[in-house]
Amino acid sequence: MKHLLIFITSLFWLTSSSQNTYVQSQWKLADSLHLQGKRIETLNIFEGLAKKLEQKNINNKVLPELAATYNQLGFRQQNYGYWDKSVVTFTKGILLLEHNNTLDSLKASLHLNAGKIYAKIKDNSAKSYYLHKAEQLALKNNIPIILLDIYQISNKYRKGLELAKQINSKQYQSYFYYLLANSENPRKTRQLYFDSARITLPKIPNALLQNFQYHASIAGFFTEDNQIDSALSHCRKAEEISFSLNDDEVNHHFNYCYSQAYLAKKDYKNAYDFKEKSDSIERLYQNPSNRFALKELEKQRITFEKQKEIIQLETSNRYQNIGLISLLLAFIGSILFLKRIQKLNRELAIANESKNRLFSIISHDLRSPLATLHTLTQFKQQTQHSIKDNLENILWELDNLLNWSTTQLKRIKSEPKNLDLNELISENIKLLHPQIQLKGISIRKNNNAEVGVYADYNMLNVCLRNILNNAVKYSPSNSEIQIIISKSEQTLIEIKNHFDSQIKEGTGLGLEICENFILLNKGTINMKKHDNQFSLLISLPNIIK
Image (tube, rainbow, N blue to C red):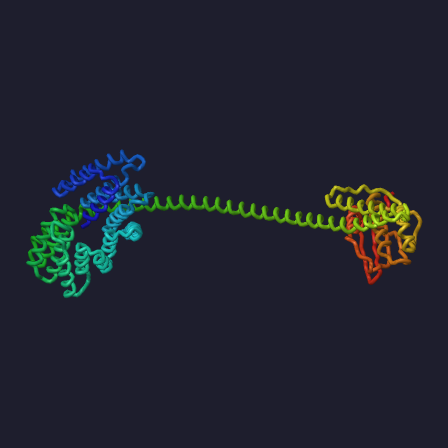
């Protein structure tokens, strides 16, 4: 059965991949020599074929043929007791197919055969490694013929019998029946298992190994039951089949059956002779050098696997590190990009707000004086002076717009110098005289002497003009505006006035310009509004001496 499994598995991949008649003819020739008992010639055929295929296997051109030939050669080396060489050959096939994903059945067979040898020397660690690999491949690719052999080696006889029935394999059913018969069961149950094995057993020349094992196993059963003639009869049948198998373990087995039967018969001479033959054959493959070589091969395999794992781990870590770095860079890039987008959105929002405000100012602050001017031109009796005043107001608003837009673009710079604060206040009061006179407003200052401050002339002038203009504009008629100047660490200017709530407030553009300009001159500006009282306090640096 083992030979059939190896041959079918190997032949399947050979015929399905290339129909290489030369390789098949060499296999048949080797098989013929094997059946004739010509072991050296058999091995020579396989070894010569393997060398030829190795030379041709450029770019894996004859990969299936070479791997299958390794499987055949390894199996024959195992038959002839060269277990160490057998494992080396199976390992060659395994390594050859390591990165191939289309020859899993052949790969599973190679692992299975290597595992069998380690099972024979009871190296459970190595056996488990190879059988586990074989089982994984068999389950993945649904290869029951591999699983059945694994169940036999693993003593899972009932599971093997169940699978054999599922695939309707009489050969394997018979195999597991006599394996169950040989396990520890009551005599009656064992007899039933042997009967089932006999009924399902294929006839010779099919299933040679199963037929041999059945006769050898039941011979042992009859020996235990002291039915010596029946036992010897089955020993002779097992011996007849053994010539076609040409296997050291098979030869050891039938000789051992004879020795046990003759021992039970108390024919000690024959018992001794067959026991000696059995032991001498067993010593051919169960020898210390074989075991030592197999142990060394297993050590090399473990070392190789560890080195491979280290390389794979290092490679994996490199890829992981590269992946993490890439993700980190992408994450940082995304954050920077989002921040840039957010910044642009904020700037765009501010720009839109400024644009809307500018249109609002144009529509509100400039429209009023322009409308007034248009009305004045309709009446000839209006004085030239009134028209001039309205034009000055328009220019005033345009100046404010220009100053505001300049600060928004951040192009304006402060150029401070020593200035007389009272002089600037007086100049701006003079410019506002027509409006002050028209509304009957009085302006009272607490200090008319020279008061020095350190500021930019144009910026301070714009601020004072806007503040005083607002004070006049929003004060009720016949009210008073107070200007209080004091000195401390900085020069303080406080402007107080009453607030007419009926007058519609403007856009606040002038006040915003004042805040920006005062800050640029290292000063402060604060406003207080309570009921109809309004107070604005400005601080500016003192004069530099």
